[in-house]
Amino acid sequence: MHHSKAIKDGSTEARQFFRRVVVAAVAVCLFTGVLVNQMVKLQVRDHEHYSTLSQQNRVRLQPVPPTRGLIYDRNGVLLAENRPSYRLTVTPEQVRDMPALLAALGEVVSLDEAEISRFQQQLQRARRFHEVPLKLRLTEEEVARLSVHRHRFPGVEVRAQLTRHYPHGEHMAHVLGYVGRISEQELRRIDTANYAGSTHIGKSGVERAYENLLHGRVGYEQVETNALGRVLRVLERHPPEPGVDLYLTLDSRLQRVAEAALGDQRGSVVAMDVHTGDILAMVSHPGYDPNLFVGGISHQQFQALQSAGSQPLFNRAIRGQYPPGSTIKPFVALAGLHHGETNETRRVQCSGQFSIPGDDRVYRGRWHSNDGLLALRESIAESCNIYFYDLAYRMGIDDMSGFLAGFGFGQLSGLDLNGERRGVLPSRDWKRGALGEGWYHGETLHTGIGQGYFSVTPLQLAVATAVMANRGQAVQPRLLARTGDDAEPLEAPPAVPDPEERVVVSDARHWDAVIEGMEMTVHGRFGTARRIDDGLDYRIAGKTGTAQVSARMRDVDHEDRPYHHRDHGLFVAFAPAEAPRIAVSVVVEHGGGGGRSAAPVARQVLDAYLKGPVEAEVEVAAEVSEHGGD
Image (tube, rainbow, N blue to C red; front, side, top):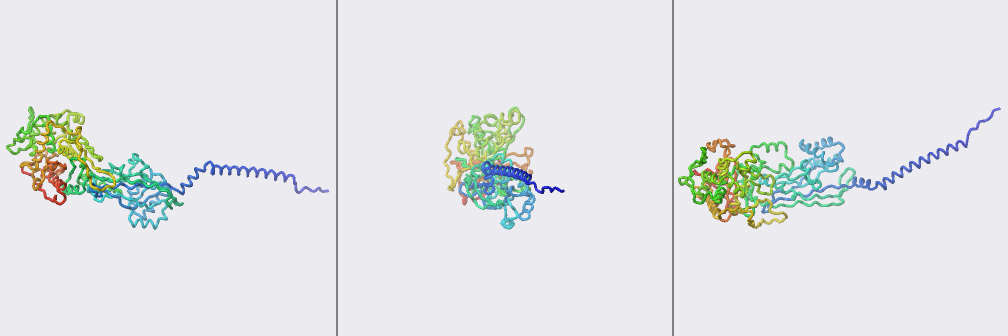
């Protein structure tokens, strides 16, 4: 008999089902708990963080660079402006493959190696969400091509911008300077927040000296973007503060006259108002076109400028250091009068040679008029070396150097321009400190005629000449006249005399004697600059100078020497002599005697300033006098 087996065990199945339900319920509860916890974390605890990230994904804060201030001359002539242009920028955060992007862009616009190299350097120090400029100046054709292919280049934008431009090119280039791309060294010293969005900074001249005024303050704007990072609209804008416009003391018309008068000769011309210290003209020739540096000068162009023997990048007006030659003689004469080592009537035999008592060495000079027996005024006018050898020896280097320091020699003038050099005013202390050697009497003689260790800048000569014109009143040279939008011509009051800033002499009549000697230089029968007296209807007080370049070729005629061994020609002057308004210094490198090369340049500048543009069109003879050498 067979027993049937139970097919279904209800109680067992019930227990199994219950256990499964419990496990499933626990799992659901655990997963629900985890989900709830994550939701609480996202929605409550980290809400602000993720909300900010979400907002940043849609809303972006980007800088708005300020408009750079303009630069004008004293009469409102525009010297530095901003012109509209387009640049190509890339936001690294939105680019997956940068090399591929650059290669593709190179098929649409021209990209040279220098632009790519600068871009890659800036990528390394830029934030990924900041735009980095790739090409600064796009042509209209390139802008059009980029617009057609824009969909291919996420993160690439064409930005409208204002680019610095110098409408006068080489004219005033050394004074104005130029702007260029911000370098890595400059990034370490500037306020990077204020320069966010800016690509250029002043590199030299006024552009650098007044960068803090010209640059302005950066602004910001909140923009809404799409998934590709394209700007859809501006949500909020904080406008930038534009840079301040500058009005300089320069007279662009007088600057052009000075440049034309200097012609192709290397050298410098500085003209300044004797009362206010305003720099009216400051020429350094040869010059360069500052516009080359704005968009990024090529390596070949920069090397060509640097390697040029004429040194077009060198600002001779404030950095060129030349022996003053005989232009120093009026100041030495005044020192001798002040210290009682000479007087107005004492005469010296300008016989052509001088020796220090007890020393066999001969110091040479020229034979002069009136049998060579000259007093102070004639010695200045005819530039008698023997007179000033003797006077320098009588005074000694200490008294002479101490007095000349009052005119600013061997010191910075304080001009509001970077890079000025101080020259050398020789003295015992200077030589001991600079060379570790003692002083010799022969060096005193060389100093007395502006040779030896003595060196000055053209600016220093102009400042010293202005002090002479003011009869001892110190004057502070300046380039900045005013700031703002007022384009009226500058009306600056005369300087107020300050007793603590005067060159004091023992007798006020000493000024008359020296200045009369300077007038005789131009208007006297034997004056070394008498050739520029032709047609003058005002009086000039001036002094010629010849700075020796090669002592071993002193006996070789000027024209027979190699160019770089020829002497420099110098001339300083102020006019009108009886009521001075303007002081001028001229240095012509390797030009020979100052009466031949430098004085005619000064005459044209003085005519243009005192007589106006029409009357000043006069030809000035530049031939050397048979008695003139300086």
